[in-house]
Image (cartoon, rainbow, N blue to C red; front, side, top):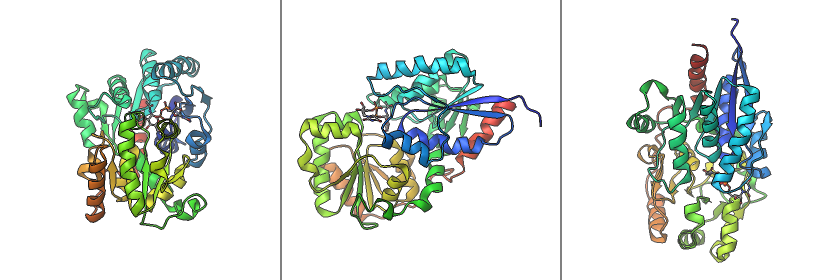
Length: 366
Ligand code: UD1
């Protein structure tokens, strides 16, 4: 078949982007007529936050590194836009693929839309209906401008239809993070992390926290860590700490609450999966971890007042417990007593990348 060559340009920026792009690049590899380019905005730049993920997930080394680094939202978004526009002008892609809801996602979408380059958004349609979250703004803007909206669950389709997105742009494809999770699960053993944590499979809790609304507000952060200190007196708690969170612990003098907690720096993808897949419970404010715990069938307490991923509550293992000490502990006791749902949402089956590749091929070649 002699097809005209089409260039697909993928954008990654922050940690949760890498595991969404990797299976898609893999699925598009070898499709006749498609040339792929990977652009790394550099929103995350620490070895453990970025480069390690690229290597572990067998992503190709990025063709372009924009090296934007950390800054205020406006500066970070602006820098991605300025540098990404140049890349688009030079590479002239036929399609830009963005994933998730980080600042890089929105910035790249704005640039492509203004250059009249079609955008495909993987993980479209999720809404927390909470504009206090910067990610919610990123989701709304990205979905408003994207041409191909690839949703992980039916609630995504419903949200987009209510916002007036034409049905023909929306494709329910499933959750691509779960492709990456299933692919790497056989490698995820506790031996890998034995040099950094002391735990027994099925006995311990894993904690992650990085949302500004939790860690930047001293009273909220203290309330969460007070519950964690109580849990840590009963069972091991492992806390791979995000750099933002680490800085806040120090600034607010909260080290005391963590004296029984096993704190590590950020972990690589497979090391982290080793920990989560053998845990008794997870406590988190991350979006991705709500999904991964559901896929793994392990209870999850979400330390927020809402979620953009309601299917993890209705068809998974997630409970929204907020940030007050008492509610977190009540949720913890209930989860440790209760039977855990082993259900998994439809299309969270490890085959999402193939479905997306098929949608993109139809779009590009008709
Ligand atoms: C970003 C995303 C968030 C995602 C998270 C995953 C936005 C608005 N937020 O949040 O949705 O869940 O990534 O980790 O896009 N820092 C480092 N090294 C790094 C990166 C960051 O030390 O490699 C520190 C810096 O102090 C920086 C802070 O972390 O100021 C916050 O980084 P930033 O990229 O602004 O957002 P995240 O909190 O990581």
